[in-house]
Length: 121
Image (tube, rainbow, N blue to C red; front, side, top):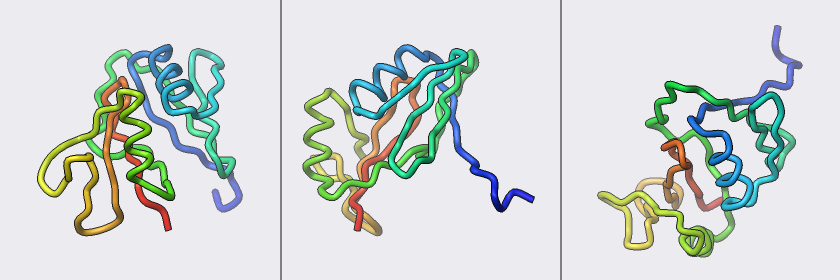
């Protein structure tokens, strides 16, 4: 039934202007806004819908992963933009998890949703 549909994902935030600033200016993702919702235009032609939700609850899982060639460089650049990375067991002083899988660093958007940068192949 849906084998030819061009599905897309979406997630909620509690503040569209803050999300627009964060995704568009801080992260440098191309964004557009229509009907009070944002569209993130990412590489690969699979747009992501960001919609407002008054009773938004932040996702407790990673909603969006950004693969990078050099995670250490990406983490430094994001830290320079005042992004704070998650800390905890197995995460080094730079905010990078270097155990049990790809190198990955988690951070949150203004709505509290988890995002990550991870070392691509």
